[in-house]
Image (cartoon, rainbow, N blue to C red; front, side, top):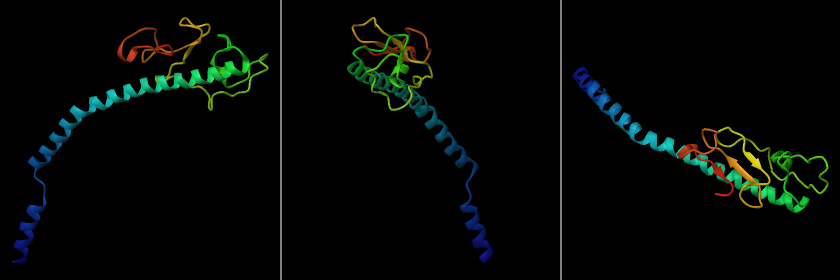
Amino acid sequence: MKQRDNRRRNRRAGVTLIEMLVVVTIIALFAAIVGPRLLHRGDQARVVAAKQQISDIQLALGQYKLDTGIFPTQELGLPALRLQPAGVDQWHGPYLVKDLGNDPWGHAYVYKYPGDHGDEPDIISYGADGQPGGTDLNADVASWK
């Protein structure tokens, strides 16, 4: 009698192949629907990060100008925010807490001074493709936009 009860319990404890296929199908459908949306969020996060980094650079450039009276030349570039350039006596930096890395896509930021859009320098990230212009993920993220 005990053996018969144990067999019944063991049969009920197992998972059938059909149950496993249903679970795997539900997981696959969920991944197919949610996965692309999550990947797009990562791309949007890169754009937001680039805008924030450009804003931080602009703030540091403003502090540099307050101390020295002028923005760094294009030749000095953005490294002048971390290391004192030769011949700049009123430099009281570093103006950035850590070294300026690349944009979220791994490309160097472009620094133009004098800028093409007013009296302040232009700071540009060329987006995912690293080329000027573009749309969507390849669109430029710039300080004047």
